Image 1: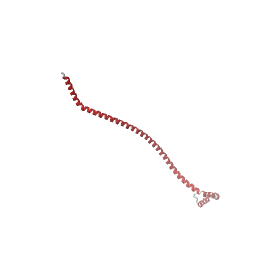
Image 2: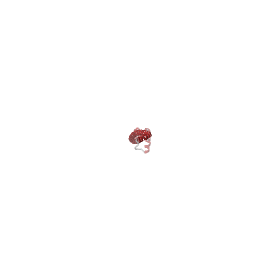
Image 3: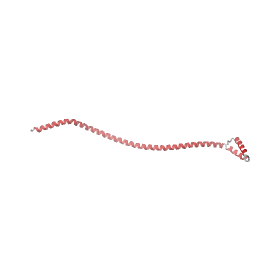
Image 4: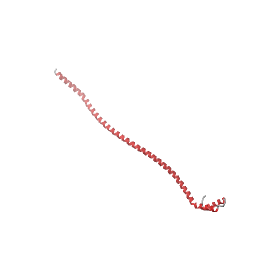
Length: 154
């Protein structure tokens, strides 16, 4: 009877030992899983920090892109204005080119008339002096003769 508590204690220790033998591999698995969980949490923390860095870089790139797009739009508008100015200038140059041709032709005519001015003055003086009292037929005939002698076109 006195040994009954001791026997119960021994039996309890044997059951405890059996349970420990069964739990030991599970404890090792639990420890390994906790280590893996800690590693995974550390990796997730690093990845989260990397994502924050990537998000910051994306935000900076977006700001840069917006600035560049604004500049590109401004340049495009300025370019369109400059092209309009160039088009107007080209039209003006074309028109002035036509004026230049017209002026050159007019210069040729004026130089020709200037070269013949003395002859015309001579013909006019001769007409007034010699043909004032003559008929139209005599005037026409005399003027034709004098013009051919002076080398003047009609």
